[in-house]
Amino acid sequence: MATTEQATEVVVEHQVVDAQPLRTRIGVGAFLVLLGVVSLWFLGLKLDGSAKAHLNKLVLPGLATGVVVGVVILALAGYQLARGFRRQQVGLVLGGSLLLFVVAFLTWVSAHGDGARVDLTGLLQNSIGLAVPLMLGAMAGVLCERSGVINVAIEGQMLAGAFGAALIGSVAGSWFGLVGAAVFGALIGAILAVFAIKYLVNQVVLGVVLNVFALGLTGFFYDAFMQQNTQALNTPKVFKPIDLPVLGDIPFIGPLLFQANIVVYLTYVIIVAVDVALFRTRWGLRTRAIGEHPKAADTVGIKVLAMRYRNVIIGGAIAGIGGAYFTVGSVGAFGKNITSGNGFIALAALIFGRWSPRGAVAASLLFGFASALQTLLSFTVPGIPSNFLAMLPYVATILAVAGLVGRVRAPAADGEPYVAR
Image (cartoon, rainbow, N blue to C red):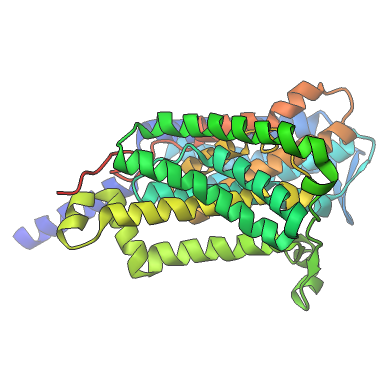
């Protein structure tokens, strides 16, 4: 009898841990209802029955697509509100619903525009390009915050990296510019590390100060030197796309992922390296330990402060490479505030991704897609105010962090200064 009761208790405890809180269940269900209603009514039933959508070579009926997507999402919403998906399934359900909604929306864009063809491949290519600096900035944040140091200075590190890449790339070549971007970003990271770890300065305030410092310093040197001698100091060569053999020939996937420049390929390497190192190596275990319980890590011989210094500086270098994408990776010249708040969006991607490399990459791609969609809508759906379209990436950021993340827990020691005994 005792054995049976004990087994029952274990099962009940497992169910409690696996279930969603009521507030989360209702919130996610309400969001799915909203997506379903918009898809069914506005993106489906509001269209003419004969309207066709052209997504690359794919032709879809506008009315039927919106109705089917709306019904599917509403069915998922009904199950979520009635019984609730498991915690592990909620992310997949939300992701799948958003993907279906995007398909219905793009179908509406094409059908609403009198059959205007939507270049789906170009849209996704643009999304990945816009997401590259966000992914690198988020990886910098993962390294820092998993180590227990809040990195609000991603924007400043990216801006310094963009400036360094343009300056050194103009003088010595784009490859040296890429290295210079990492060095300039690492310098901002080193300042963050010294003041946060040694002098115990409030890390959020320090990050804001460093962003303003980087903005003012790069702006001053731009006015004093670059603008005075643009040809010699602000004309770095942009890396040309490299078509990888075999991989670049894969239909649809090849043009998206394997016909890009070296900064994009370096981003792939950094993402994989951070993910594997953080969860598959001794260094990663120690990094997570000093971010969760530095005192316990110190008692077993881990040098907490040394690891924090090292990881924050490495994170700054990665963010600097993200800044290089704005100059030697795409634009080809530095301008004041060229990063335009991308560092803050990268920080939001880090939070939305639950301080995980994979989650941060997914969130960065979402925000990159919102930015690319802004450009697409400005050409295909005339009449939408340009200021409204410019808000899309930032609205997506706010909705994602405030409405879809729910309760997330940062590393326990994140932002908590540690004094070695």
